[in-house]
Length: 195
Image (cartoon, rainbow, N blue to C red):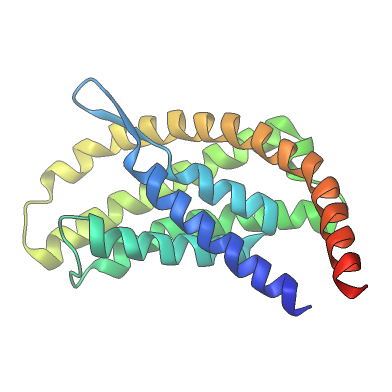
């Protein structure tokens, strides 16, 4: 039991690192569209482990990102910028958990899987826009541009969600195929340690 908890903590730490690294990878299309890859890690953890681990990775990863890599650092509105990432993790994790509870998996239902990630992305983009408006009010900068960005944000979120879903799906299936072999090697190693 103790080894599994330590293993889970280590995996979450690695996922936080991957979230931070992939957060730097962005594709800019034109002067207005930006596609990021940090959400791949969040979706992967949510689908693999469920909402609790996904929220932990999202909250810690985005807090570190905001504190050390954002130009704003530890601003009064820091929790506002962590919230959308955490909500994304929670919603995807809950969707995956709902299927897992039935003995099924959301990745077995391709259309539902894609539409779930796209729906969550749309919701989080709307939340981001509202938070940007709230941040403008709190920090006293013009908020009129916020709603102009909404259309670009919604479009960008859908492109990112499709890319994220397309990368996460084979990644998840590959890990699930490899896990039984890895578990068997772990058991063999533990058996040798007992002898």
